[in-house]
Amino acid sequence: MKKFKVVLTDYEYDTLEPEMRVLEQLNAEIITAQCKTEEDVIHIAKDADGIIHQYAPFTKRVIDQLENCKVIARYGIGFDTVDIDAATEKGIFVTNVTDYCLDEVADHAVAMLLTLARKIVTLNNSVKSGEWDYKVSKPIYRLKNRALGLVGFGNIPRNVAKKAQAFGLKVIAYDPFVPAEVAEEMNVDLVELDELCRRSDFISIHTPLNKHTRGMVGFEQFNLMKKEACIINTARGPIIDEQALIEALEQKKIAAAALDVLEKEPINSDHPLLRMENVLLTPHVAFYSEESEMDLKQKTAQNVVDVLKGQLPKYLVNRSVQEKFSLKR
Image 1 (cartoon, helix red, strand yellow):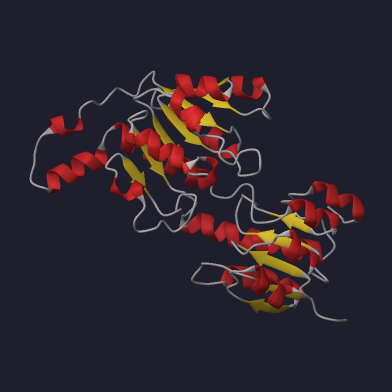
Image 2 (cartoon, helix red, strand yellow):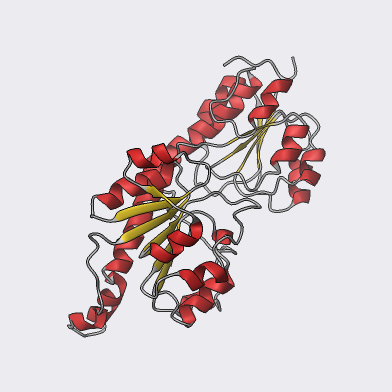
């Protein structure tokens, strides 16, 4: 029997040992690469049975060239790097890991909120420059009873809501796919996006990136926000219209921003956000802890193993593809 071929098209990890231990179940030929372009992917993965990828592009053009592929497993929760319709049409399972880094991203979002609220960076820089004056941080407002608006109300923002409520924040959320009773159980009000923008003192982005959410927070939304409002993004950069954000900050339509993700990563050295004292930036790190990285690597590899062994993977994005196969659960 011919060996399966599994290709890891790209990764940014120091070791692949956790994946390799899981993939040993297949006794497969395993190829690793660092693909950047469509051509790179087609060249290395054209005849692969299973694929693991992080950021490499899986467009319709790429997917149409895959001859044997049965599963494309993405490292992460988001799957905007894959043309889901093209994969489904070709009968390829697309998987992610939906319960990965739930605490890490929620913790990072709340840490950013607290850092902005208490002006920690401003105060730290002031002390290190030789000043000892709390007034450089004025005004600071009490967190209790202020409003946190969550754009998206899936697993991560629900985790954020619990942590934020411990500080006395009132939480509202916008998510047209979540039933009102789910939010009510967590003492969260579901509202429309415009109302969320008007009411919130802090806005935290947690929606997936797709054709409907790209640029969903733009000029119109910033014009509705309070001048004291702070926006936080630990989801995907393009959900916020970056030019609209820059203008809102420059014209003091909002008070501050904390961003773990940007439209283009890494950030250009001449980017205007780098010059703004009221902007906190981290390098797309909200997902990371040693524990979350291990979970992700093992579960991503297990998705490939499950499909190639004729079983339904635990984490399946395009569920309609099941109709084409009789895989066991």
